[in-house]
Length: 297
Image 1 (cartoon, rainbow, N blue to C red):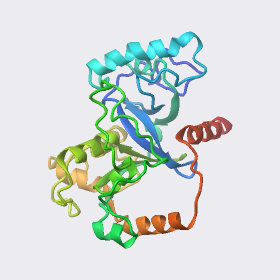
Image 2 (tube, rainbow, N blue to C red):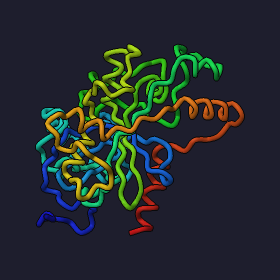
Image 3 (cartoon, rainbow, N blue to C red):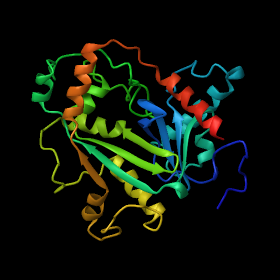
């Protein structure tokens, strides 16, 4: 049901709907329009998934078009509510969006596939084959924003980032789960900072789950299950033989698609040695995406 207070100028279809999951900070890509990871904040209601440009509350100059600092004040007010509720679950979508820039939007009625793409950790041997050490410090990756783990966390508690490895390199060392959502407009990929933070906290024990005997219900899997249940098997074009089973492990296994990434790593690092190239910033990538979305509307 479309919200009776819907603004025709906004892509939001149900602004008064409440968040059913806490806001999460992710990296997002939408090939071929957005091929590099860009940091976003993502929120979910029963009707839609909304991606917001990743600001931090301490950033004072994130919007050059912010007249008289109105958007900044709105964000500060809303940040207090998000902080108090640990991500805003139960808050109205329209309130959470105050002062924020929407960079992506998915109506759940248009989703026809939702999975978790699981990339297995890169072994030490794979790094050694490329002439790099997995344990040495490397320059920060220009393709990935090193912003804090969650927008709504206090600045002090959100600064647990590693001073040695870029976020991309840390992802390569763990079992990376990407939420994969397909619509007629393309395939969106999201990887949650909270999932990487969990790996950083427990350490890489090398006991990785490639046989699916045990499933850690991280945010990628939780959001996948939530979206699938909202869409229902009648809309999703995928086999889910254990959908709704009492044994939740069987249901979750059906969502997970395992992929080895070591060959891709070797190809990428070999190509990097051969050429020097300029990587566009996340802002530029989002601008390109915004122009593309505007031209299609």
